Image (cartoon, rainbow, N blue to C red; front, top):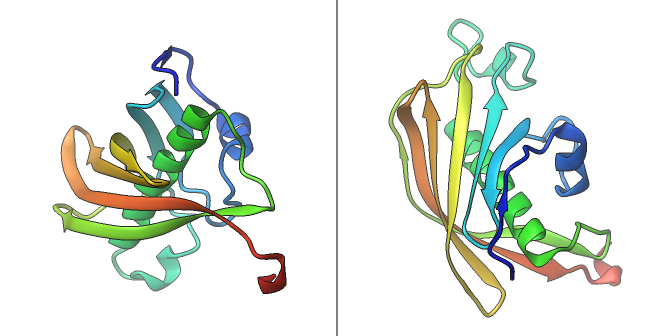
Length: 158
């Protein structure tokens, strides 16, 4: 692993190159900064066009908290793939292994821009542990500790 600062941002094209998710489940719009092996800062622009808003809730749209945690995990995945200098492939999947101490402080609504900050706490036996904080206008809206693992896909399971 290299500890280098990536000073240029990643646009959606590079994000899609380093994230296995696709529409409607891509929850990172831009990477603002990254220090390989350490941390990433990314953004998610929340729009009324999100597919979950008609059902959550039609009279008062609120982004589901679990999707805010998922956005943090996707930022973590980008950081991990870039740190390992690999790209997602059809031969592996990046799974959640655990979520601890998740807290939701404020609702997130259409028009908000979520700033995601995720730090690598440790890497042990292929399990990556992160701390994530999501902010809107500088105020914390959610935070969690997450564990993820990159696992090979058994071709018989496909």
